[in-house]
Amino acid sequence: MTPRVAEVSSAWRATIKAVTVILFLLVGDAGIAATGDSTDAMKPKESPTSKQDSDLMSDLMKDMATIPTASLDDSIALRDFEILPGGLLEWSDNLRMGYGGVGPGVAPIGDSIRAQRGGNIFLEPQGDYMRCAIDLLPTAGKLPDLDAIGELTIHRIHPTATDHEMISYSGMGTKNGVYGIIVEAHGRGQLRPLVFMTVQGGLNPGEEGFAAEAMRMNEDGTIALGVNRIGGKLKRPLDSLTIHQPDPDKVGAYDSDYLRWIGKSHDGEMAHQVNWRMNVDVKNKNGDSNLVVESGFDGANYRKRVEITDGGDVELSSLGSGVILRSPNGKRWKLTVENNGKLRTDPMGR
Image (cartoon, rainbow, N blue to C red; front, top):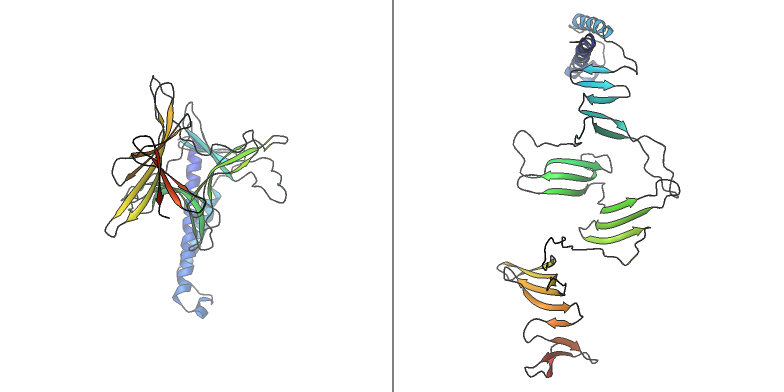
């Protein structure tokens, strides 16, 4: 052991002893006060352990005198660990942790005060090609069935036993069986929207800013797309939702994935699932295509209902199906075609 490490090791032992003695004395005093009534507790007492307390304090002062002092320019080295000037913590040649985010403040926008720099903690790997990560491990004991096994939580208010307003990135219990990004509020807390945004520029003077809110989960759990867009070259209207087929690597036709809607019903005995979906049906390698709408019930196969060709034609796929039109007097008429090609109209109920 080097002299410096031995010195620090001795200092740590002295410090731990000092803290232990102080806690002992505090607990002892609290215990004495708790044994009598409030009047007795306020009277000075001769403790039978006063001689022992005096001896402990004497030993404490001697130990405290042996603790070495260090200037801000010094570092403290423990085995595989150093405390560097400026409060940096370093696991030698592996990882450095410290306080960061300092810098000039940012000006208000109108009468709105912006979040200022500072209060950051940074992690910096010290070796080539090293990954920087924070691992939250599950308990070494039995895992819970419900709620979070582990989570990273950001609070908007200081939490109490009754008041919470937060977002958590959570791994849920064994019976939950999911991972979650969870917005949560209790008591004085309020539910807030969860937004997915892109932001570029606008921090430096003269720099054009751009921000887009691609998706928002509202307080009631509904989803809205493209709510806000500030600056940038792309103006409305825009493609808020895109279902994209990956680029093919060989000749062929590749249909798009489906956009699916699910309705529910209950017949008094059991629940049923009503399924509708839509996709792009690519006919050939030249790219001829139809937009197809299909429906199905419970686990039955989907059946095509409507197709719109890339030439603008509309085809009703079910045999004998037609188009229902409403006349000026409000009556409904079904327009169909007979086997000989003649059109036919039949009245429909309201």
